[in-house]
Image 1 (tube, rainbow, N blue to C red):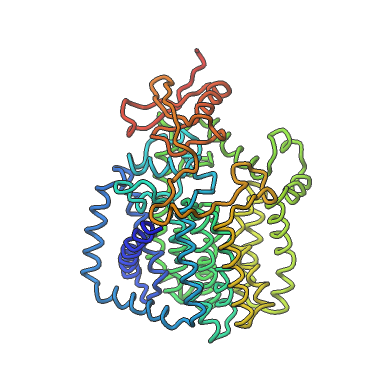
Image 2 (image 1 turned 180 degrees about the horizontal axis):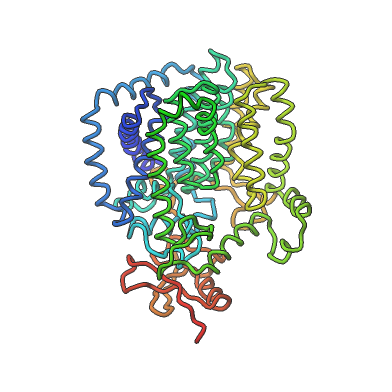
Length: 564
């Protein structure tokens, strides 16, 4: 906990400096401290991403980052200090209850970040993606080694910067830092709601009620956390400004949308939020969007370069466009991975999926067991009842636009990979909307927040079997805090680091002993892949991963073995 807190102080200093410069360049004069911090994370991510094309994200990068950090601070010291003083004043004027709430939440987030990692994706590709960035940067054909490594998220690039791998090996908690920023923003807006009584302030102010759900994600660099938080802030600013066109709010929204896309392309529907703002005010907006268009082109360029380097497909896992190189992932494997994610979302085999009509498939998805089915039914229920509630209580264009976007998101994903977490940003918004219709008074809201903290504390310190929520045996117990992690956080992997070295052609790789699941990689040295995966693809696809040269930095290829 203590080491994580110290690292967060440096991270906050860095992202505020970089965010301040970003706002200067984009002429955003309104100094929203939390938004500046997120903008700084965005800028550092882009800087690190382009750096990783040629070099590793390691001590060399941090020396450059530190120099830029100091230059920015010294050059704009007065302005940065004003932003910080204004932020501290906002915290100072919070009532005692909200100050206490923020303090308790801060300690709980740090404790959860220091605990055992919960998310299984951390063990399949989060750790290995970040280690690869730290040791080599962007590696050609990395997806040939492990299919999941091809979906490298922008958030993992950010984490590869702020895990300080050259100093300490157990920092893996940037999602917790992001959740803390989201809670600070939310609590400040809740306090403002008690003065202005505007519903969108209340909607974002309810964000801490969802901490119990988020906490299991933050001991790993889960890309879902920043997407949820960015989405709610985007919705807040959209509801705040629409239908008028505030160019600075438009730029803030656009930055957050671009960052969300870089982190998780399934958030594509969010693009329509700034698009609606421009279309609705076309005459005033068009002359003032050039800086955002340039930023968008830069983000798209990096996204294409990143995906092409690591997989050969500019829009991996989609295979409609490929760049033919020696390290391009064979199309049959790319299609297998895409189909695998779809089957996983529906919990079906390929044969079962093929035999089902759309209606049967939809009903199967709706009635999935446990937490999946519960959330799926909740999403459908929200879609059905929200129009009636909007028409009766808040018949405003901005709310209707967000509702329509939620429906589009549903239609787009229901035929591809309709995992409930891909809907969670809209689910949270309209769930908070329904709660806001019932609980508006301070005493009721304080009671809800206190209850949420109590439940969060319980799950943080008391082991609970989660069989009622999931059939996944690797995720059937919550991640709890141990006193051993008061100073040093838990290692990045939940599994023991027992591995063996294997040889396949010119590839020497590491594999965990007694592999707990098929896609596991854990925290083994690079290159790491489950030996069962190697055997599976060798048997059924007649390919094995190989090094391009004797240097790991030069990347990987898939070698066909039909003649063997």
